[in-house]
Image 1 (cartoon, one colour):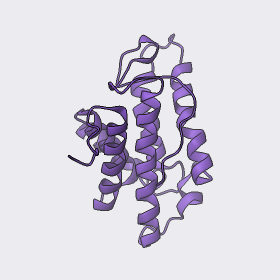
Image 2 (tube, rainbow, N blue to C red):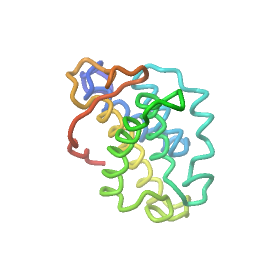
Image 3 (cartoon, helix red, strand yellow):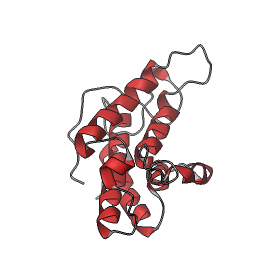
Image 4 (cartoon, rainbow, N blue to C red):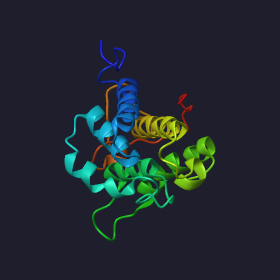
Length: 178
């Protein structure tokens, strides 16, 4: 039995894997955006090395500027792989809806969407590491929950018949303790 608690392949198992992996990633030295993106890829079995490299500059609220939380931005990017569009005439509503299901619970839980307000910019504090590792875990878990809303335990579905990583629709889920 691994860190998924025996739920491997289920949405709950993937959520637990993503949460724990994101927390451990952050504590091992990845920045917040890298931690979340790598954990989501790991939970789904998708190679994400180029994506992890691509989000390096998002850490610390966009290059340590204290702006938008990097974990949050990485979560929105992952959701956009499912609900996003390719052609300019395609409707973007699904992507915006999915992002909103991450943004609003994130704001309720953490009080803000920006790194500076949530955590300050003293990256050397143990409190910062503890708080950010928890934010990474919560964000990764929430993304998995959004992708699995309205689905059985069988894994990533395709909301609206779209192509991509996952999808789903439904009401808000309870927020995990993190």
